[in-house]
Length: 254
Ligand code: MG
Image 1 (tube, helix red, strand yellow):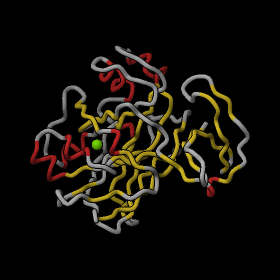
Image 2: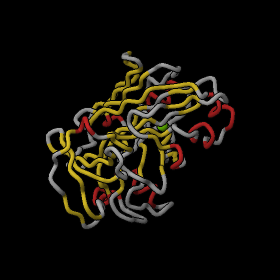
Image 3: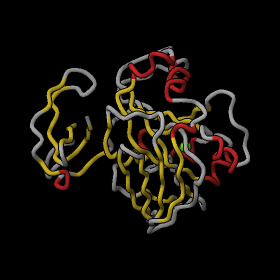
Image 4: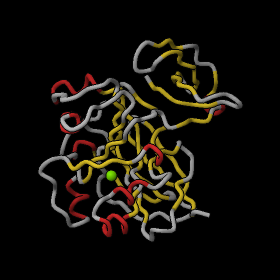
């Protein structure tokens, strides 16, 4: 099933589900008890929103060998984790705003995991019981500030630096899917999720040994090689085979 958050004219945001290019509302808690109502509104008539409202956004650094190589850094022996603030989230189609503090803002196409229930010290073998589904994401990064600061909070945490969507696919298989990123139509990144250094299950085990995961929390699983700069007027497409495509325009801060 594909789950969306969406808005129609003059109505509050709500969760819904997709059937054959139409959206139907969901009543109740998508992570608990809920009821699906008939899907009768064409997708083209709704504004799709970021499909989860996480209490935290956990990201993985250097989880593809080729990407570590392009930055001339060693692969971590354990998953390298950092956080983005929820204030950095934007919806599919909303602009990524380039802040004036950075001269080198880059895209990072990533598979994103949505957690479905609270868990702590989850073992890898049981990790899939805690996965609600998957979506596409762009871990937008101010590369110059990342190198300058050492700590990554500023480089990764600007408003608009966390686009994800367009929906949550609850049946997606993350073991071998192609991730691509195009910027204004030009291919930049292409790799398979099978090239991840640490699998989704291992990442969930590792993260939950540190912090309690809550329903709705999201995990950015790392980006493959090919990251590159964004400029005003660009359009960034992150596509995951069999899952969907996230598109965001790029604009300078006024
Ligand atoms: Mg990243």
